[in-house]
Length: 301
Image (cartoon, rainbow, N blue to C red):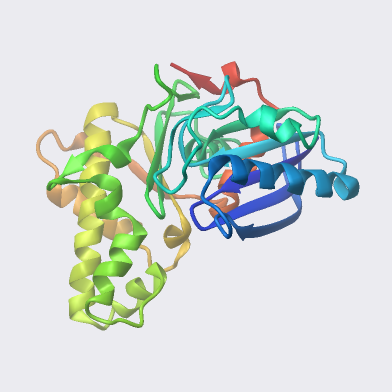
């Protein structure tokens, strides 16, 4: 089945034409454009997606449109319940109806971390695992999703696993541990830094940057320990652009988790940390998976 898949991010909206079934996938073509080049208005963003789909179907003949979106998303009603702070006028807008003004095809949508988890579960790091797991996506914010009893736990109000909102040291987890925070703290020492991977590389030879990186790992570890004590998962998958870097160390992260944990230590000691295998395509592939699976097969709670 051929799907047009979108990932609406804070900086870019990525899209891909994907041939997919429950055994394999192939990305035929992918591209991206600035999400908020002209407006941060949610309806404007959805209209842009509709217009993009209208142009692309003439060349690719896809059968459905799938969206990965930041914020709390009701996949059944196809609307954003609580939008990301990045966007305006996205609250409870009928996503499928807006896109169907331009193209009369089925429309599917889900939260971006859930899409990433679904992609990893079907084709990535979790493909051969069926144990309870947590997905953590480190980017502009912190996205999290929970895989329990072979389904993604959605929760009563579709907000289960919103670990970025947990509070620690008078600020929430996503503000303390996201990539932007790492970069902004590093700029106080070296103002030519613009990417998280730069910080990790330079920290190898710069003691001041190394301290900032260690505090960043420590912040991530504190949040992961909370998940381990509450859910006792078998696996934690770490995704996001910075996690793709060779300088990002699961070993260092695990060592911080062990330093910060208290008795009983088994939930921390036994959990397996995995890097996402689908990298920056995880959300696009996961969104495409929505069109080959019924929502009731994917989500519960």
